[in-house]
Amino acid sequence: MERAMKITSYDGMLAALAPEGVPSFHVGILIGPGFVPMDIIGVQTVLAMMPGSRIHFIWKNRDVVEGFRSWPTVPTMTFDDCPPLDVFAVGMNPPEVQNDPEVIAFTRRAAGSARYVIGVCNGVALLGAAGLIAGRTVSSNFAAEQLLQELGAGQVLASGDGPAVDGNLYTAGPGIGSFEVALLVAADAFGREAGELAEFAIEYDPHPPFHTGTVATATPQMMDAARGMIGPIIAQYRR
Image 1 (cartoon, rainbow, N blue to C red):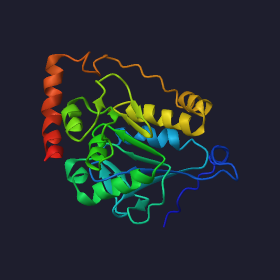
Image 2 (spheres, one colour):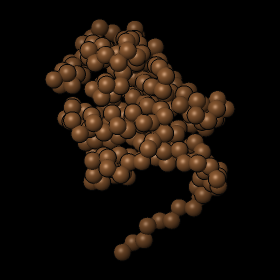
Image 3 (tube, rainbow, N blue to C red):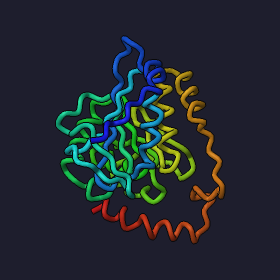
């Protein structure tokens, strides 16, 4: 049987990230079947660099979960053994997951006691289903504005306006959003210098090649095509 490769080259970096005596910083990321990796990768990347960070991928059980598409991920924690979290984060999961009463109840519980709550793209709708966006300013997918208002949001930022910060709630649209909210959380939790260093360490400096990534810059044809893809999913969230 082949031995697992032992990786030691990261030891110095890991020691610097979690020096002795630094308290643990628990980051819980909800992943269900069909989760969108793009919406959580920035959270994992940035917050894993923070002192004492412990990243937990959370689902009902520890069976392999396949993200959309072909992104198999092993949950490291279940709903039942999840500790109190410093950060609870959720990106887009399909309606079958986000409409599940057990998922909604866990989201309400985990986010309710977390120091920071992150929602990206249509993951914000799950926060809404759990009663966590009432009267608050949020950012999400361009097609979800009406749904989020129905779920109680006080204001939904327009596409291209960047992340929304309302108290301990950090929300953003897809694409680069998960990096931006994670950097803001890092700066609030560990100081602006930590956020700035993380931004430089990952060389976060987007250069969109086509500049069509917002409602203001997309063509009507693109808008129609995107609504055709996401509209039926939004309708299922609503049901």
